[in-house]
Image (cartoon, rainbow, N blue to C red):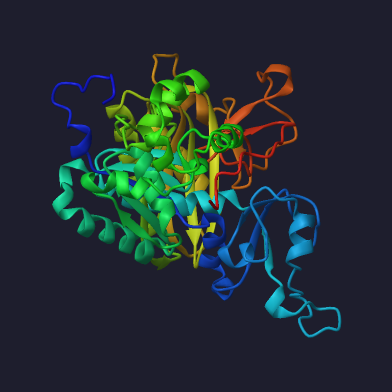
Length: 443
């Protein structure tokens, strides 16, 4: 057993019920959500790609596209060599590729993906009290309170809600540990559900290749295979002391994981980066209805921020026009605030751009959170001009940075939850900075 002690009152590892939820080919699924004709077709989503280009890299490829050898992180040109682009403009033209051997290419739209992911997260948090969000398309849930007796019903209901309420598909693995639950969710993709009960862990893990075990990279896998260790079952039959001598502490951890030992508990990843409140409604262009809903959402999110002792530096709105046209606007403040009136005022001001539009969902968000005391900006200061900057859904900003920006650079957090800029997964926008994010989608 692991040397780590179990905290008093905590469940024994074999009593834990951990679910790993992984959205299948999430970016491609989102594109199909708003463009139904792509269902069943090869779809490639490119980062740094624009329609008609040959530059950029594959962020995700649908399973149909993978059948042609297209893989995540592959250059777009390499993907095109394997899967020609469908000639949308003139599908019957003489140079059009064979429809059966061509696919659809779309540029990354992180705003839309994050908006869809937010809907998924709502279902996750309504299913379990403890959720650990790993990435935009992946999370762990602690289902221990539900127990093993009802886990099948709980998970199938979760998958059905994601499918019916959001329109995308999730694969779910359930096991007594996080590492085994992750392997279980990968076992029957796409749209799979694999439940590994406590007495079944070793039998489930035994045939799994060493490359798939947590923490095993290509170099370690090669060294293990050179020792005749090819599967998790082989690892369990090895001498743990020899593994530790060869691989250090990782060797002991590898031995434990191959036997299903993993005493990590599902815990949220630190403090939230943002708080939001959203509500769907029947499509309407009535200004009064939209403003009343935004007032209610602003009050809710401000109350939740206050309950968490959180100040916020950015206030934003999300406006979804039928069918899935997601728009976000955000305004930075001159300092961190706890001011419900300001949240309402800024949200209504940002909403005004959409007064004439029909909407099907609205949201209000506070972000760039600060959990320490600080001088607060006020509604009077904001109304007088302040240092706020408004940006749109794609991070389009004024060409001049605010005067207080160090070295001509400002950081403004938009609607997204990740770490770097505009159309980047983390949502903060920096002047003059672009980079390709890590590819976490599509596995």
